[in-house]
Length: 65
Image (cartoon, rainbow, N blue to C red):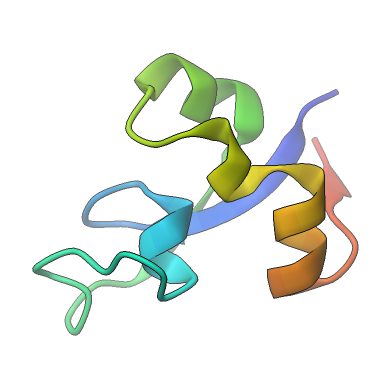
C-alpha cells in the first residue's frame, strides 16, 4: 500500500501545500490527495517533500491507500 499525500491541485506538489515552495496559483488552489507512488511517477519534487517524516510533521499520522 502507498501512503496518501495531500498536494496542491494546481501544481501537484506537497511542498506547495505545506507552504515550503508555493506555486503561482497557491492562493486560488485547492487540494487533492494522491498516492506517494503517483507522486514518484510525476517526479515534480524530491521524495523528501512527502517522506513519512515530513508528512507526519505536517499532517500527523499518514494514511494508507
